[in-house]
Image 1 (cartoon, rainbow, N blue to C red):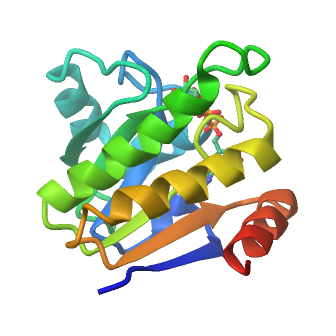
Image 2 (image 1 turned 180 degrees about the vertical axis):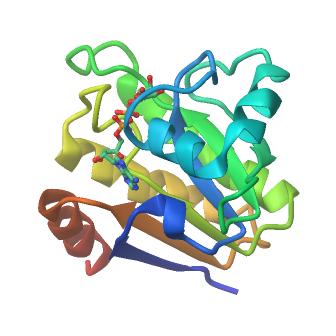
Length: 169
Ligand code: AR6
């Protein structure tokens, strides 16, 4: 079965899906941006569970419960900091998306929502990141049959237009 991949303007903390993905950092101990929003909406139990995980390498992902969020799980994926593009950023970003889809599949998740990982505080150019995200998710879905629905959750006009353009090709 082919998964449905779409874009939607929404605060990811409101998504009633099996897993929302967090754009985390290697410490997994919270931060600003979407990470801060997810921790605030989930409540302190999320932080407590994250403290037991001992961090996560860039390009990888770890899964927790979702506590007060409407989702069932939070997948904490760590994207790269943008340093100009010649320090393996593209591979690391693709790897973060792929790791998140693989974990979602292992946990039987049918629906997954992603933010635009690395494109805020980490400075990855949005247009480049959107191409990487859609391609990496598409590839990963081929080995993740439990995942039937992927939503890219965007909060700004630029990303909405970028993802609409790529997904309509
Ligand atoms: N729902 C969906 N997307 C959001 C939301 C939201 N509620 N809030 C922000 N975004 P960022 P990064 C978008 O900075 O670049 C944290 O401190 C935002 O507009 O959250 O991967 C972590 O702890 C942008 O498009 O993540 C790390 O230290 C996208 O989410 C660091 O920031 C990602 O922006 C990670 O930086």
